[in-house]
Amino acid sequence: MEGRRWRNGVLAIVGTLLALGIVMIASTSALKTAAGGDPSWFLRKQILWACIAAGGMLIAWHTDYHILGRYSLWILGGVMLLLLAVLIPGVGHEANGARRWIRFAGVGFQPSEVAKLALIIFVSSAVTIGATKTVVLGGLKKEVKGLGIALAAIAGSLCLILMEPDFGTAVLVGTLSVSVLFVAGIRLAHLIPLAAAGGVLGLYVMLTRFQHVRDRFATFLNPDLDPLGKGYQVRQSLLALGSGGLMGEGLGESRQKLFFLPLEHSDFIFAVIGEELGMIGTFLVIGLFVAFIYCGYRIMSAAPDSLGYVMAFGIVILVGLQAALNIAVVTAALPTKGMPLPFISFGGSSLLISLVAVGILLNIASQTGMPRHVPVRVYTSGRGAA
Image (cartoon, rainbow, N blue to C red; front, side, top):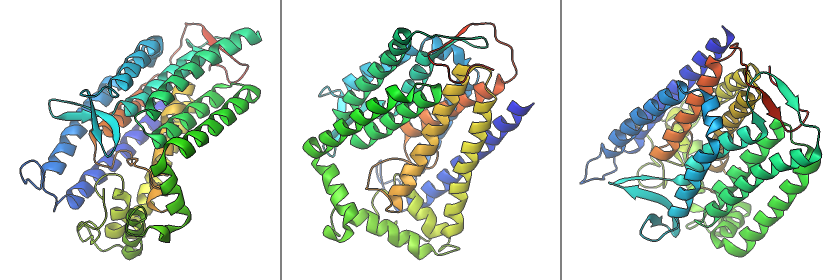
């Protein structure tokens, strides 16, 4: 069965990335001390989160994705409440001038990470409803209504994320949402003006409200502008990548992790991979993400209906785009932005949501070839159901 083949491929790829991530966190955190001076704290916490996230993946795998589509409004509504809660003093945890986390019983998570997946589910169900049989809605009024519901959810989520503030995640969520709408078949005549307006508004907000983002862009354009400040992290990242050469310095032999490279166990772990495992290691990571995208594309193409098709695309683009942005930042191809490398970076929120998203993708793959008898509504004359 074709769906099983690509499903097994996704499992093998994700398992390899998870294992590599745990090995690299063990390497990068070996000299760190936390929780009473325990150097194994980061490794133990990541393993714990990996087990929790694997459980979430299994639950998502065995949950019919049509149920998620049916309750997508409730899912998004709950996430919106979390995005609101994080802005409340005393509820949201503030760090480095941003209020992005909610902490409970010593455990913290980022609602914006949950919002990425919730928006994929909601937007997918907003433009496609049901399974097998496709009925095209010809009236412009109905098409705009469906698009309007999706855009309202996207705009509301983006506003709350920007209020944290988190400009980089807002850009990622906006790009992700527009991509899902495009693949769903929304007309370019409607999508391009809206995307352009959103881009202009985002640029205005960045120029008027986010001084740190402007500083990062200035440093990106001129790395020598602030070599010991805003430009320090990316310079150390490039030193790590360059010193690794072809074969690397050897596992555990990174020099940059000796308190030179900040966030070496989370957002900049790719630089340590390059230093310790060399170009071969970095190409392996990139190749695994490319393979994930390919397997996800095959699952998407064989999806049993339009809802599965659009939802699978959203999940694939979420993982692929986030990985590409992280690697681009680490290699100085984009301005610095705190964004974890999926399945590899230290952190519970990202790992949990990434594996739950993979679980949904596996459920779509598991239903390939299964007949459906629920009507589908598609807001444009784009791709119909299988």
